[in-house]
Every structure is written in C-alpha cells, then in structure tokens.
Amino acid sequence: MTTTTLPARATRGVPATRRPQSVGTAVRDVRTMVARETRRQLRSVDGLVTALVLPVAIMLVFVVIFGGAISGGSGDYIDYVVPGVLVMCLGFGSATAATAVAQDMTSGTIDRFKTLPIFGPSALWGHVLASVARNLVSACTVVLVAVALGFRPDAGPLGWVGVVGFAVLAVLAFTWLSAALGLVLSVDASQSVNMLFLFVPYLSSGFVPVDTMPTWLHGFAEHQPFTPIIETLRGLLSGSGDGATAAAATAWLAGTLIVSTTAGSILYHHRTAR
Amino acid sequence: MDQPMIAVQGLEKSYGAHHVLRGVDLTVRHGEIYALLGQNGAGKTTAVNILTTLVRPDAGTARIGGADVTTDAGRVRELIALTGQYAAVDEFQTGAENLVMMADLAHLPRRTVRTRAAELLERFDLTAAAGRRVGTYSGGMRRRLDLAISLVADPALLVLDEPTTGLDPASRSQLWEVVRGLAADGTTVLLTTQYLEEADRLADTIAVLHDGRVAARGTASELKSLVAGDHVRVAFEDRASLAAATDLAAGLGMVSTTTDDKDLSLSAPSADPVRTIRDLLAAADTHRLAVSGVSVVKPTLDDVFLALTSKETAR
Image 1: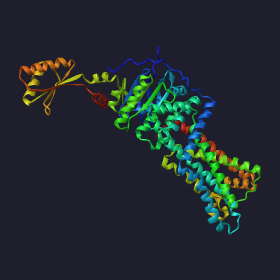
Image 2: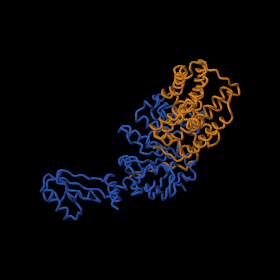
Image 3: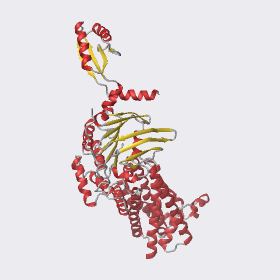
Image 4: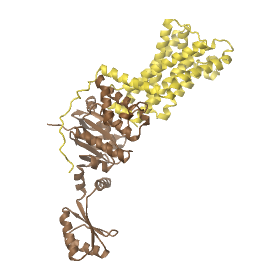
C-alpha cells in the first residue's frame, strides 16, 4: 500500500505573508506589469528599432527624399508632413502590443496570471501604459529630429499640452485596439496589425492633400479616421485647428477606445492559453 | 472536521456538442498527491481549468478549501498555484526577475520579495543561472523555474498539468523528488498525467479519467487489484513438460491458466502465490517435469488502464 500517514494540515487561511486585494495591490499589480512590458521592449532589438529608428527613418524619407519633389522645393512641406509621420509612428508603435499580447496567450503566461489573486486586467493595462510611455519617447525623438531638419511648429504652451494630451488619447485607442486584436489573433497574424497603421494613413491627408489624389479615392480619404486625427494634430502644432475636425477626431479615438477596452476586457476574461 | 482540500461533485463541461466532462466527482484530502490519469482528450486539462478558476463548469460544484471556484474565485486564487502544460515564464526576463515579478503579483510584503526569490532560486538549484535570461535556459531549468514561481506564495494546493511532458528522464525524476518533498511539507498536489509510471510512483490516490468520467479511483495497489490478482508463472525446459503441467494444474483445480508456447511457460492467476508455487512445483517434481524458472507477476497499472479504458469504450 502506498497510503502513508500524511502530515495533517489544518485548513489554511490566506497565508499570513500575503496582503488581501485592495486598490493599493491593484496599483502594484499594474506597476509590476508595466515594468514587465518595459523590460520586454527594452530587450527586444526589433522593438527598439520599431520605436526609435523606424519613425525617424520614415520622416527622413518624406522630408529629405520625397520632400523636394512633393513640395516643389519650398521648405514648408516639413510642417505639413510631420503630423502625418507622428500619427503613423504612434500607430505602428502601438501595434506591437498585438504581438506581445498574442505571445502571452500562447505561452501559458496568461493562465498563470489569471489564477493569481490580482487585479484582473492588470496584464492588459501593463501593455497599454508601457505603450504610452514608449510612444511618447518615440514621438519626442521624431519631433526633435524634425526640428533639427527645419520643422517650426507655432503651437503655444497650451497648444503643446493639447498635442501631448491628444497623442496620449491616440496611443490609448491604438494600443487597446491592438491588444484586443492580439487576444484573438495568432502570433503570426498579430504581426500584420501594424500594416493597418503603416498603410491606411497614406490614404489620408497626412502626406499629400486629398484633392491631389484620384477622384475615386476622395470619399475614403476624406472620411476615414486618420484624416481628422492627423488634421487635428496638425492644427494643434500650427496653432490653427478647427473645432469640428478636433471633435470628429476625438469621437473616432474615444469610440475606438471604448469599444476596444470593453471587447478586450470581455475577451481577456474568457480566454485561456491556446 | 477537516474538510477536503478539493471537493468536486457532478462536474460537467461541454464545448459545443463535445461533452468533455460528463459528471466528475473527486475528493482530495489535505497533503496528499492526487493524480488525474488519462489519455489525451480524456478531460484532464478541462478539469484543471475549472478547478483553477479559468473555466466555468456547465454543471456541478467544485470547492477548493471550502471556497467555490465560480462564486468565490478570488479566495480560491489565494489558495492555489497552477503550473500549466507550457512553461509560463518570460524568456526576456532573467530567472530572478521572473520570480520577483511573481512575488510582487502575489502581494508579498515588498521587503521580503527579494529574499523569497533568492530562497527559491537556491532551493531549485538556479542560483548560478539567476541573472541569465530564461531564453537561454534548458527545458529542465525552465520547468524548475516554473515550479519555483508557483511556490512563491506558499500555496495550499499546487496544481500541475502534465508536469513532466517533454522532460528527459533525469529531469523527470528530479521533478518527482521536488513534488514528494512539497507533499511531505504539507502542500496538497493535484497533478494530471498520461504516464502510468508517474501516477504509480508519485500519487497517493489515482483517478483514472476516461471519456469525461472517472473510470476508477484508488491507490495504485487498489487499482491493480481491480484487474486481477498476481499471476504465478512457471517456465519449463521442453514442450512436453509444459503440456503435462497444464493438465496437472487443471487437476489441482486451477482455473483460467494460460500457456505461452514461446517461452514454454504456464501462468496461473492466484490469490496466494506462495501456495500456488508450492503446489505446482510439488506436482512437477512428482512427475519429473523439467522446470527452468518460477516467478510471480504483479499486474501493472498498464493492465488496469487498458482494461478500464477498453471497457469504457466498449460500452
């Protein structure tokens, strides 16, 4: 017989060393997850290139290589194109969250997190907040390089507050959308989420005015979300925005944010590792 | 007075038309090692997912330390730790960083986080590799780190889903040692496995899960006795002796004996092997039969498993 006398153990309560869940522990959970994501980003060569090298390279391509031809030689094209480059960079910078989330879903990490007495969506918030921090850093890099190349924004102090606030809203919306997609896509498929942010902005007023495009593209280019989003950022940077465009952009971003956080949280709740 | 660590009644779960669990009952006592044994698709992982609050059952109840897994999931999560089929460690973090992260998520007091991590690294023989990224670890090291992480908050119940799948034999027996040590210290361990040997060597109680139901449960010995008792096997030097012995055995009242023409042996099921051997040898001696060997064959868990699962399938 293998039945040996086992050390009887009284029903244990919460281990004495462990603290019960509270707002404090929820904040600690999110902080721990942000630290995890930041570490993942800083240690991935691919991630660093996407965050810092690619945005600057894209801007150099538009300003230095295409700039002369597009603007016909005048120096103003840089002021026109920087907002487009910025939004595009914020977009594909956020899209890496899709792959990070998809990887978590396949590795069993998600199962472990979900069996811990932690604040439920803290893992997703870790991805999102780390993404905000990373994208603000790459946006600053882009702006600094742009200024060095001759970019001269007219925004006053309040305008800059608006720029940062709008950028944070955009990154929140883009990252939550990417994270929600990462919950349903395979790791491979998740890598193409950035295509959404790399190509759709080209079909907006971000790089060339819509009226220079073929007529059949006007409808899409004028009404797709990247047009008001980029126009709003351009308005804030140049200190000459119009309220209707800003309202449209904010509505698009807030709508995406609400749908994505809701869908993401529900999906996360029902997912186990695959 | 002592309620069981795990109390499961009538657990059912379907995915579409596929009934994964069809009414599972389990009772796991405090401090025991309990194995859920079954083939792929038997419902082991689904059962584990329900017990660890990852999946909601369609019917039935499951309580961990008295807390219901669906209505009191928060409390259940404070009692359990899960080591899933895939090592849930971050490759981009070092071993120490992985442990510190999990200690933070377990809400250990901040000042004890690092000492607890160091202690577990030491215990699982990972101190030398603590500063290396997990991406460089071997499979066995990852499993050890995975297990160390599970123990960070000193869980009352450790759930191991196929803990040794894909491990080499040395890592496997090392892991078995660790699990035995944990149980000896009072941790209850629920493990799933498709390896009979693992259940046999490790578990105090085994439940054979087949087709969404518990086909049998008990200690390894109890399960083995379900199939049949011991067999006495007598081998002879020639075919004539074997034939003569078969008649003699029948004369002695031994029923359902079998013969093996290849190794010239006679097998007789027996509740009292010593007596059967004595009777057979005495008869062989009297008739001058050439005996070449005698052995007692104990049924293996394999026999049990095959008997139970084929019976279930036939039904």
